[in-house]
Length: 362
Image (cartoon, rainbow, N blue to C red; front, side, top):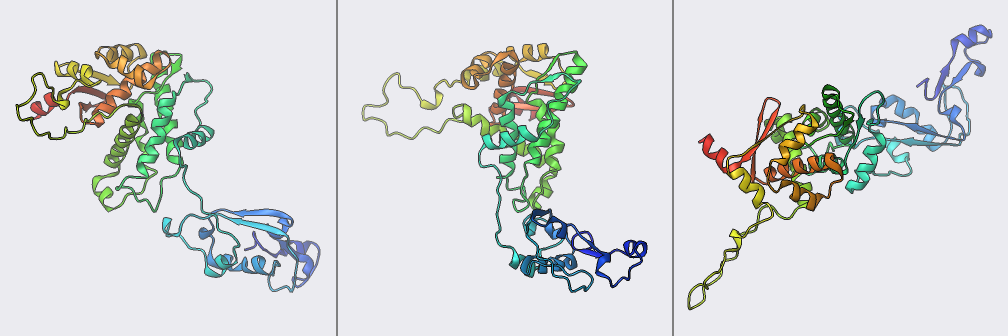
């Protein structure tokens, strides 16, 4: 209360030899000294109830009372409060009389588009670092990081009343860049280009920023975070690529003379993913790690027939580094659509044929 409103200053009374009942010994707090200004209080519910009561006179009569002194100072001050929704925390609430005296309540919201979210993250994230390899963050990876937050805000395992703040994407992209810098330093590379596998290094940024409902608690924070990452990849994949799971053909009544010769089942038509899937069906696999040099990383992805052409056609990457990221993203998107199997062994990620892995597991 003394900090905000004011109090009697005994040191001033002793040094000036004044009585404690003298108005000259009053110490004025921050709000009276903000006359003709704007005073902001963050996290208003955390303020103790008795201190909130001290704000009632200022909000209504625009004057202050300090230790019972009959002082009326006309204050010209605009007070701005910030608070999370009441169900966000159990630490405290805003008392009803004070809420009644607030003129306007402005409800904010999360970014509605990925473009706005990327602009906020680019403004706040610490990725332009000195004394380290230059971090080059492709647009595809920025979109992928933002898609994680959008997927978390739709997940049934995440408590939506608590919300998913922009701090998640800020911390996630910083972790991703840090992992890329660590790899570049270890391999003696001048540029640090993040990869899709680096996104799993940002799991701590996701688990620490979301509140789970009961079903989510049963799954566990790590499992929910991985599912959110998978949903983000799947949503972004459908934005750039055609449907990876073709719809079932409608049943058609055969003609009276029987089916036409040379007719072809629509479900059996070749898709744009067939060259990639056929390569895995031959027993081939791709093994990636978040520590392998860039040259080995590109060489491993180039082995997949048709993958480079597929990524270039739909993602239109620029430069070899972005092409490699686009190819890995394409593999991860096919995995999220259950077309390619993905297996994690220690720090190694292996992509292989889905059907072959199912039979081996049996």
